Length: 122
Image 1 (cartoon, one colour):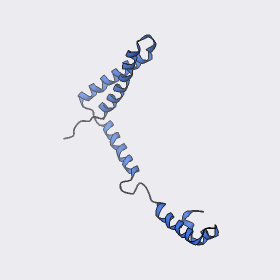
Image 2 (tube, one colour):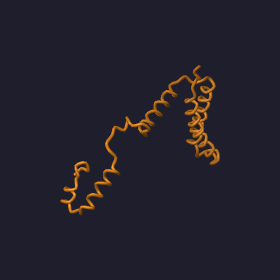
Image 3 (cartoon, one colour):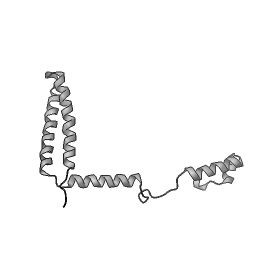
Image 4 (cartoon, helix red, strand yellow):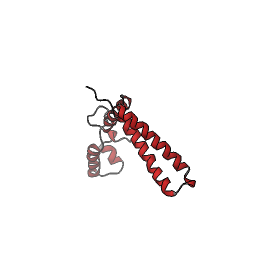
């Protein structure tokens, strides 16, 4: 039985006492949220995620400054070289492979951040 269709009589039929039924209905009314459209309420987490996603898509599609294009290309190169070093790890010393694994992270993060830079609109 749905909570919205509950009343004291139906709870009494289920074997609850009158005070238990009243307490249950009171708590159900206060604790269980009312149905509402989550996209229409202000400050909702879904709308915040939607706005953030749209902001990131706009940033990625915006023109990238020349400096950040070069930085992005260098970071792609660092990441690619690091991947090759890690994959050929059996013939190289362990410390070189360890440093190359940091290079993969640096390349990936640097590439993503460089792509998010945009030309300042005047």
